[in-house]
Amino acid sequence: MRLRERKGFKFSVIGIIVLMLLVTIVPIPYFIEMPGSSENLRDYVSVDGKRDKYDGSFMLTTVSVQQATVATLIKGYINPTNDLISKKEMMGTDSNEEYDEMQRYNMETSQNIATQVALDFAKEPYKVDYKGVYVMSVDEKSNFSHRLKVGDTITQIDDKKIETSKDLISYIKNKRVDEEVTITYESNGKIKKVSGDLISLPETKKAGMGISLVDHTEIETEQDVKFNTEEIGGPSAGLMFTLELYSLITKTDIRNGKDIAGTGTISTDGVVGRIGGIDKKVIAADQEGAELFFAPDDLIEKEDKKLNPKIKTNYQEAKDAVEKNNLSIKVIPVKTVKDALDYLEKEK
Image 1 (cartoon, one colour):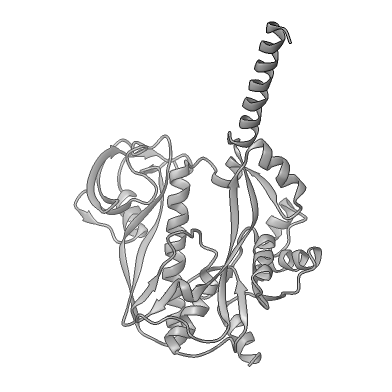
Image 2 (cartoon, rainbow, N blue to C red):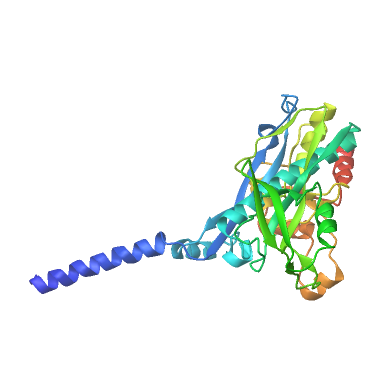
């Protein structure tokens, strides 16, 4: 082989190696959603230091999300249980850090509400402690942009203590655009202050900070309720947390030895809400051997149906996934926690 040919061959090999690295390692702005895991809640929840000892299990279910490369993108298209979503579809305009913080907040909130609902059903006393106001997002045009961040808790504005979002909104409504306010807030365990002028909100043209917010609450109860879910985020375990906690608080076996999975957000009045990725979660539950799967039987509004004629309830999506993938798990529709408890009572 001549020198020029050897050099050409060498550069070709290097080019192929570089191309393979680009295809298999370099991320692209897409994510692949696939069936995740089903986690036994006895490993994540305790009451007064005690964990679930009854036969069977309550399981939360997850969707696995993987940053796509060209190689995994091709593989994702081959597997019919996977879906490809863009970074914008998944995170909106949030950064990775803001998205992770939001997932952490959603998980914490679902735990607080599940505790409250379980205590309500068990007829046990508790107190809702208002810690301030969570920052959920900050508009780029806000004078607090890049100063406050998602997850910060506002506790005071000027000299007024803030316990709820209503307190903050009530205080600001009498202020003028461009008027300065000073915010006291907690961030990563530290108390900080920041000042900025109010802006004209595009929706109302009234003065505001340009942030979205929600109450930061904690439940005070005689029972020592603890969660260990550092590696899991999002609000969709609310229903299953509630069932697990109710069983622990009342010291009652409510599942009669069955392995039961499910998903759904939870509200303070016990309504089970819609979640994403249920077609993948029911597959994860079936793979783990769950016999039953509680799925939100959510109400589809006429406006939503008009915008998306093909939209289905979570229950319908789960049923379709069972049929499509020949799963053996039984899907149970629930609108409220009471629906789930009533079903379990009938199954005894």
